[in-house]
Image (tube, rainbow, N blue to C red; front, side, top):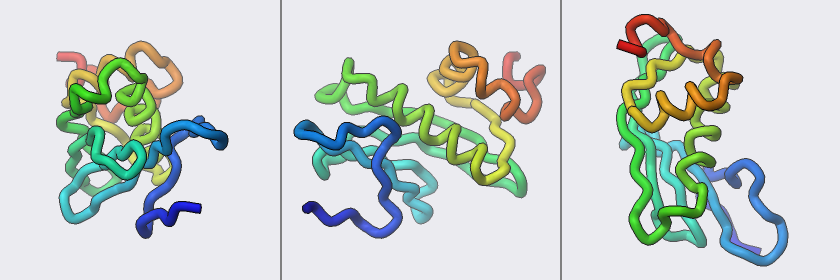
Length: 118
């Protein structure tokens, strides 16, 4: 069984059978959530934190990993983490903003919808 780095967790809906292992870890020193596939860096979301809020700034999925739904898994993960931490969200990142718009269950997290939709 592979060892996970401290703080790393499987991404939501990770398959338990054969296939790639997808993990997402909050890299506090770099202020970003890092997504790995079989231990290889595949993407990340950068953020800043303020008391009671997190601002998502930029999302990147490396081209070699595009088209696998990893961006969606990463977006869902970071938004679920914000909810679990009781944080409001400022989606400056266009990808995260679009994800929230497509998935209405996250609208309640947005700190100030009027500002974020401008």
